[in-house]
Amino acid sequence: MILPFVNQFLSHFDHFNWCTFSWLSHFVSFGEIAAAFLRGLKDKTKFKNFQNKHEAGPWKDYTVERKEDKILALRDERSMGLVPSGGVISCLTSGVDTQDKGFYYEIRAWGWGVNLESWQVRFGFIETFEALKEILVNHRYLDVDGKEYFVRPAVQDAMGHRTADVYDFTRLNKGVIPFKGEQKLAQPHTWSKIDVYPGTTKPIPGGIRLLRADSTFFKNQLARKLEINPGDPGAWHLCSEATENFARQMCAEYQDDRGFWQCPEGRANHLWDYSYLNLVAVDVLGLRFWKKPEEETQKAEDTGRKVLKTPVVKSKFMTR
Image (cartoon, rainbow, N blue to C red; front, side):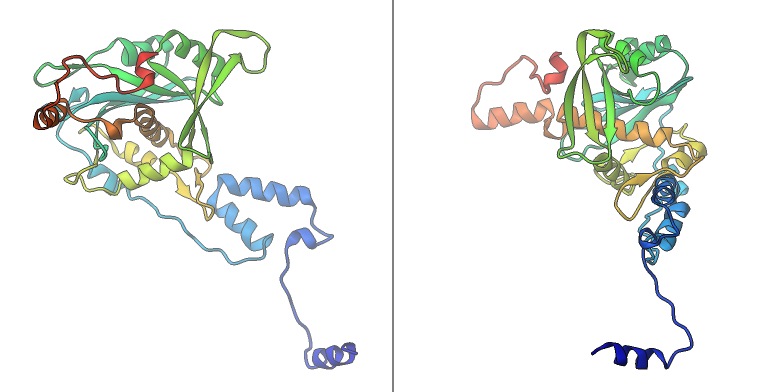
């Protein structure tokens, strides 16, 4: 009954077009569609092509780009290696991005409490595990008053490059944690027990605890940190030696329309990666809940409680 009316309607047009998903077409293979999608995960322009050509939908750009000059505005007057003085620092952490030929690392000093204000102390690239141990484990960092600080913990990327070597290094240096980032987890971070080396049945002596974290959660946190003005609480301070290349890498990644962070093909993002690993480190420590010792002492005196003279353990990790 409807067909005559449809034919009459269509007779008014010389031709007509419609859009549909490519996976409904007999002329496009599922392999071609899947390959286009995977290319889009690595390149924003290619993901746009996938959405236009295969999903038959309009492209909506949700990217929030960071500007290099705004990153460089986070620099202060401190030289590399110097910890801020005045009792504002609670601890030092490090993030390490592992590559086949070496390691990109950053050491940050952190203030107390929920604002998570931090200062870049040292960053760079080194080639050997021996040099990495010297920087992360053996070296002591000083403020202008001569107060010493050491790095605890360091979070080192263990996936994709030299995984077995990283497992051994972190097993022998308890202040360094092996790490795996995942785009989505049910909680910001969790732990997995690893008993054998990757790709083998060879046991790891004593096993290791692999730290797993939601990279999207912490990269979102890092992006927000970079928006805070240097004079405001919670700022992400850089030392005076931070270069334009540093700023460029901090602007390398973007968020796609699913909210996941992507790095365009050919762009370096090592410094962005080790920066968010520092945020993972302080989440492991529970730093946002730490109180300055004098604040705890004053609170105890105000309430009439006895003031403990022994230090309080702030994280289970610190007692490993």
